[in-house]
Amino acid sequence: MAVARESAIKITLVGDYVGKTNLISSYLYNKYPEHEIKLCECYETTISVDNKEYPVQIQDSPSLEEWEGLRPLLYVNTSCFLMCYSRSQRATYENIYAKWLPEIRHKMPHTPIILVATTADYRARPNEKIVTSSEGKSLQKQIEAEHYIECSAEERKNLKVLFEEAVRCSIKHNTRTTGSKPCILM
Image (cartoon, rainbow, N blue to C red):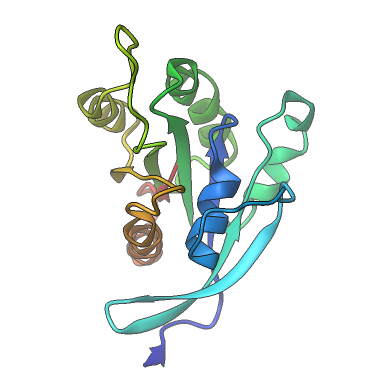
């Protein structure tokens, strides 16, 4: 299998405290983490997409307000953002539009976004309202994200698909003409 490009594709995860670090760990190590994981790390790996291997950096980002001024420094050279919210926490869904989209678009206005619903395995209790798939798809259109993907770090559901689509989105963005919007995964 040939390596498709020399410089690494950088995928940055943003969003509230919704399991971003667990999602990365579960994807990279093929199991749900049972230990405390360091925040704000950058992981390097190779992802195979369409019979080509791509060097990839996966950048975790802190959601704490104390990092608000420094967090954008992590966005440099990002080729795709994953904007993440939890299906079980409506406030995290609302923050995509209210907080994360403005922050990303201010610093990286043309980088593509993928909207990511974490905790896809979550089962609502009676009378509890979770964020539905149709609401996620509606938000995808509203923020003009390239894709909407529901995943679960604990069940490892759709993690491979998520990162493969982020690579595809990055490749697509790299070949677009100036002025087009890049791919962002949230």
